[in-house]
Length: 356
Ligand SMILES: [Zn+2]
Ligand SMILES: [Zn+2]
Image 1: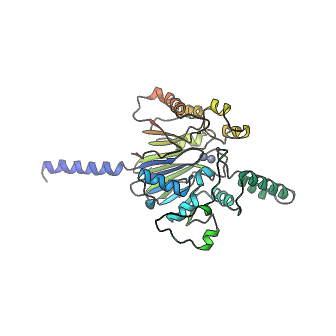
Image 2: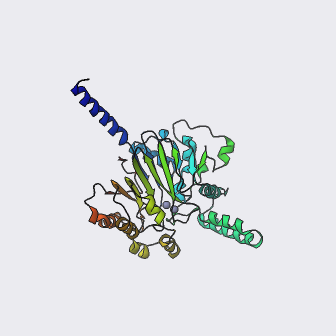
Image 3: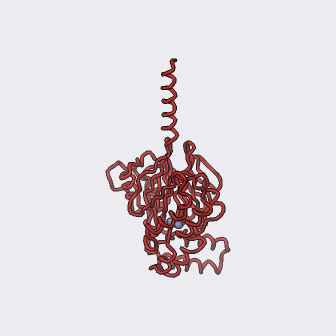
């Protein structure tokens, strides 16, 4: 091998290596209280985190950004609130892929789909309340706790959010849908396969190494995720009332960070939400304000991200520019760091894929 060949080989190897290493991708299809969903891909594995829009809308958005739904390997669910699961059953059945939950989240989701009749949110809450009162007189406290979880299941921080039961939205379009057995169709919570994970315990799907971490939020067992493949790390942390130490720890050495920046405190205070909803959003199990996100970025963030994607922005109680300015000011003192580009995720449209 002559000298020129050797140089060429080194070049080829390094190019191949670069192509191989630089091959993780995050595509935010939607983010906000009306629906959340993000595709995370390595070169060999693709997962969807949450399915908070209708199946039809999720497929439409994947088509817009060039994500092929047929190549998805699994769906992962952060928690059972409707803005994270609205299209879940229909999409999972259509793509015939497994869904990963924690066991309490799966149970809460199944319970949420159990009412057989379609009723309004108010009626349903009333129904739950009456059921609870009746039981309180006679049955064990444990059963009551179960109902409490069910009562919180339809929550979204959008008080006008509607519930879409999956049975009502079966497939209408061309690409030969699989025939659904009557038994499956009768069960709105039927999924092709269910896998359980636990917060704090990492697991793998293909070559994606996934570490779920627990987050403070008013759901059965809510989680954020860190995904790692080929030396690149991406994380999702939305729907959290505050930044506890375990989350700060989980968000170290992250290359692409999707981080909640839900509301501006003044806008929320003066905004249209009923007092009870405002209290919920502001609580330790609600959502991160722009200020709380800025505080994290200023004091605890390690500056390692090439991209920080601000997500779950409230449409009623935030303005994208307020969220951006707040985050930019928080890292302003550290602009000597490479990267740290701030991007705003959107509710109404998907973001272009972020490649690393
Ligand atoms: Zn949410
Ligand atoms: Zn939530």
